[in-house]
Image (tube, rainbow over all chains, first blue to last red; front, side, top):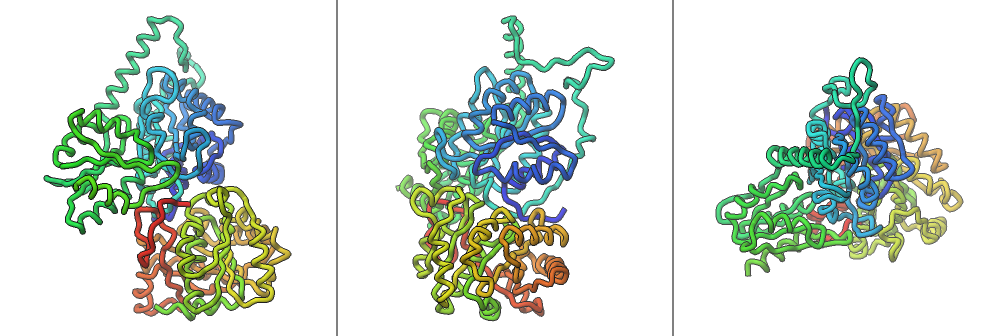
Length: 351
Length: 248
């Protein structure tokens, strides 16, 4: 298929269709309104259904129902809306349902603002809702990667029967870049979900549920989930290394748009005689900590940069150990650091 | 590359840009404003984008200031909002245009939804003094074929309560645009033009590609070289302009 010029939000929407998804339930919020807008125009063209729910809470419960019936489905929202969905996400994790959640993050806490942010890292990677559960978290840094990771998110959700987040800062949703869709999945060609509740004709009923009153059963269920998360940790870590070589002066650790800004800063630093590289986690959960550890051994300094006051840095510090000094540079509230700011930070660190 | 033959086709004092969401209106509005300024005109650009939340022309307010181009956009907290704020000042600028020869550019939001604001300003827009230009990029979703484009043109005209007076052919894939992309998509634009009897005023081309095209026989259209100014934070702005730590 020929390349198209798309906004991140539009590419995410089209990628869901190309992944064989025909159901969207959601509620508008800036800066991701182009996803529901796009789905409302495109889904009727491909025999799908777009439902604007009365709230994010109801959207997340509609997803529970649709996924329980064995259909690929997804929603998109931005930070405050994702907070409202947490009840549904916990239930979906508990009932082991494959659902894709897109979060195009804006500044918080509370209503915050409408400009880009990465301050939902904790929410996405450490829980968000109640109970012992984990969601896979994929973080694109280009419009093309947003499209690719949405397609992957549907596959991983089905593979693990688990909610998957695609976590992008507002810029990932709003910027435009050329995109190519490499793969188209026909919904009819997807493997049958034998666990789904599709009408129990000639078989025992399948039950979609997260209620376990017997504590022995609930304990067993929790350990079963834990085993699944261990599988994800074993198989699904993804990252990108940029400009990594022996004897780096500075290693940037950043994801999403900030990683793009760091790449520009790395080129600038090179012209100033400083060798810098980038470690970019693509999966935020599971966090590629072992790979980061081995790359960090090659660098004098480690500088984490985020559009938050410091969230991913906790995972970085955990994996690099308490003896390793880790510097931080963040902008928040919708302010976005320039490459020049990162260059200055790196130079300060090397003084 | 010479921009004068293209820019001189915009004879009227008011230039309004409409078109599909994401077709390139804002970037073209900014480029046109800069070109008018190079021709020593007095220039006002009105940010009437009530649709998209980021990457509006108000993003480069400091650049406008340095070039002595007047920007009309909401101020204070509303500067950052994505609310349908229509400034009384925008009407004032157009009322004044009825007896002045300064150049006024209106950057309007995408689709018929974005063009609706023009309908509400109908009483201060004089059709005889206005070029209402529809920006075409066939590489954008919902703008790929002749019929879908014509449908959108009619919807935009309905919302704006005005007739489109010309097209700007603007098919591109940013820095990945090839000469062939431009030429093949121009065929679709030509067909739209033929079916609607609306002329293509010029073809906007990313400046580095422009030379390659002119050296290869041209397009039989005036070409307007375009530089990107409304950029994400990781791309350096042209002409050494300082990047702001914001993406409004």
